[in-house]
Structure formats: structure tokens, C-alpha cells
Length: 307
Image (tube, rainbow, N blue to C red; front, side):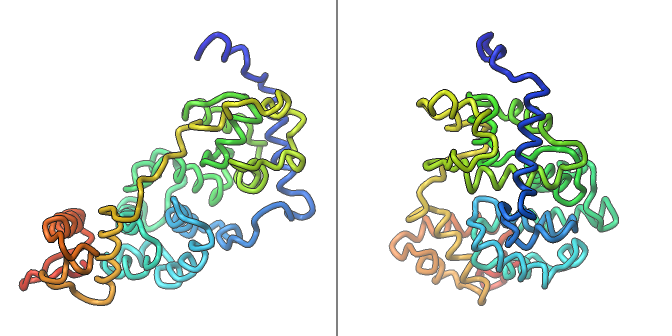
């Protein structure tokens, strides 16, 4: 951190005051400012929270809600998920894409059963040791299932932190330390939800609604006249630009897995199913990648099937 950046850091008292203002905004009018239509906000079940956070990765929440209900109806506990074959998990994952997430959730469920008697742990290191669980998801489980005083930083929260609190771009470790310091004591759940909602509904990327922001008078970026470059761009290391989907290997993989949900795909059908009838080499390479990752298997006749 440069000397000028160090001098720009707010005193701890002011940082906590911003956290309290955000948490209070989330509780205002009985929580009317929150996105309480999200079903996982009505539970403290750690497994349900883990499922919701895994489903929501890089996915619009409007698509997540029906998948969340469907998945938990089939696999209400980690033990249920771990006991099912991966093929059943992938079928329940239909319409969500990023099928590696389904595999990772299946692996995480198995680890929860093997290491923690089927109960999602309430310890950060134990959560991070689960397959596919990263820093955001681990802290989200602690805050939203166990109401721990830890902060969560996604793209939306990162915008608030970089714009309002520090007025500069933040490295991931800085953002995490900052948000942890902002959590009002005993308010981990309500603060975390309010911060995410503030970034999603008010401190939006292209059209921030500064007049509706509960910390607008304290916001360093707003007070400075919202100068360019926007400090939120590239801040906190949580926002990445996705590669083009159309025509990508990812699209072909998705088509193959979608087809496998309804039945096997023969060796001569792989290229057409992947959407590349004139490129059998590419289709074969992508299919072998699915097999290598455990998302598909080959039967004795060489056809692809779900595991």
C-alpha cells in the first residue's frame, strides 16, 4: 500500500459507523429494502445455505430460485446428496450450467459426511477444506447460517467497499479485512444481507442510485463528485470477465451434459450433440474432458452416459 493510500484509510470508529448505517438500512421498514423474496433468506440450515451459494455463483438469481427449491426437494441434507450418484445430482442441476459446481457440491457433501458426521461445519478452516468451497462461500455460510460476525465480499459488496468506504480500488485481502471490521457485533447475518443488497439495488455498477444510499454523505467517491476512474472497477478481485459463450467449448460441454440427462450419447452422435457436426476432433476432445472430470463415463459400447 502506498503512503497516500495508507493516509486515506478511515479511522476504525468511522468504518464501524458505516457498517452500522448499512445494517440499519437493511432493517428499515421491517426489512423492506431487502430482497426477502430470496427463499434461502428464510433458513439458517447450513446445507441449504451451501446449496444456495453454490447455485448462485455466476448465475442470475431469477434462475437460481426454482433450482434451489428443486434441488433441496430431492436432496434435503448433505447425506442425501452424498448418497446419490453424481448422475442424479447433474439431473437435478438442469438449466443451471457450470456443471462442475454440481460435481463440487457432490464432493463437498461426501466430505461433510465423512469428516463431520453429515453436518456442515461452523469453522472457517474446515469449510475451506471442503471441495469447491472458496473464501466467499465459506464466509457466507458462517454469516448466513451461523450468524457469525464475519463479512462477505462479492462483486456487489466490493463496489460499496471501494466506492463508499475507501474511495479507491482494494486488493482482496484489504476488502476482506475492511468488511470484517464493519460488521456490527451480533449482526453478521443482517449486515451481510444488507451490504449485498446495497450493492445490488443501490450502488449498482453503471447507474448507482446515490440519492437512496444510506451512507451517501460518508461516501468518499460521491463526496468527491464520482470521479473517473470508478474505484470499483477491478476492485477486491471478485469480478472477472467471462469469455464469450457462443461457440465456446463451454457451450459444447453444456449441450452434451444436457443431452446426457435424457440418455446416452453414442460415439457417432457426439459431434452433432455438441453442436459441431463438422468438427469431430473438437467434439471428441470436449467429451474426453467430461470423462476426465468425472462428469460423464463411457459404457462398453463407447457411448457417453452420466455417472
